[in-house]
Image: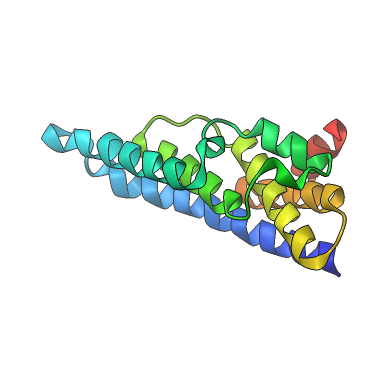
Length: 155
């Protein structure tokens, strides 16, 4: 039951994540010409630095080390707010116009979301992290079978 709950929550978070990226890009597209073209990178870079300051530098970059630590049962790999902060930094990167990728950030946010669920339910961190990874990536890219195969191929 707990694993199913993690899957549902992470899948919905992934759907929100991809929708927010697309809607944010549409919002910032209106500033693509004239002097206002400097607004998106300036505003998003400032917001990204603020998130990193409060959540820690581990939210920057792809997050591979966090995912690896969580799938090996290391709950100290990240804090409880890591999934939200990681999604926020990825969205801000996309909105700035300088996208850094969606695959690895989705995996790290998903693994952290699953690990948070494991903390709450007293379940296996490793399995919950893997389920969170698969579900969040599935919700983000809307390809559940592909997400499942990619994640469990590496596990």
